[in-house]
Amino acid sequence: MAILDLMFAVFQAFDAGEFYPDEICAPSPEERFTRPQIKAIYGVLVKNIFIALLLVTLLGCATTNHSVAPPPLSDGVWSGTLKSVMTRADDSHEDGKSDLLIASCNGVVRIWAGDGDGAYRKLGNNYVTHSYPDSHLIYFLDAAPKQPDWVEIQTYSLLEIDSETAVLQWSRAVNNRDVAKSDEGRYFFSQGTTRLRHLSQTCDGRLVP
Image 1 (spheres, rainbow, N blue to C red):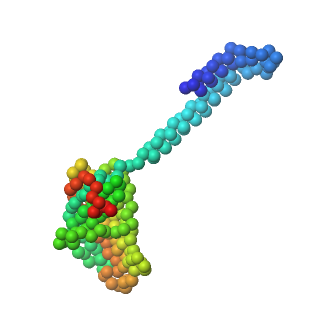
Image 2: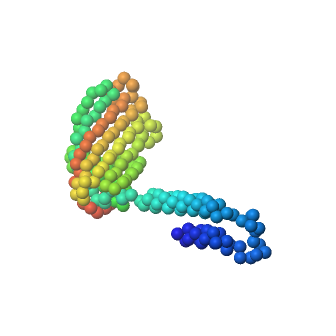
Image 3: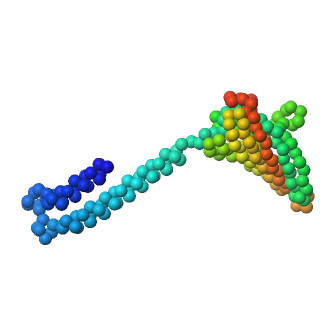
């Protein structure tokens, strides 16, 4: 607004013929701008300044929005029983079921699968997590350590419904590169869903080292 006020004052000075206080520097009458010319120049200047201020404001808002870190998955341990369907390379299907623990601490997430006897093993290694409010994508892409005879991809889409409940969609793809292409186990896909309960709301160092 200060810039616009200054421009308005300059326009008034032009309009009143008072912009040249020093008679030595004053232009001849034929060199002076006419009143319509001054108004036209002022209009162009005001328009350009307004556009510049608008762009600065919009860019400032965009920068601020992107600088705000999205909230991570709530701390604690989530638990559920995943019901899934596996599809093999020969199009055969198999139903499955597995107990899951999803542990989160300060934005770090680890996923554990039950073996049916009360014990759990950690799944995957190279975790990546993306979050928006109450919505999280967790995935990892792993392979055999020395020679990638098999490559595995798992994704977990987790939606927090409230502080005690979440829902989960899971998918898995396994590429057994060392298996004959005619073999039913050459590759397979699995997918499933479950409802999760928030067992605890504090970090558990045993599950998220």
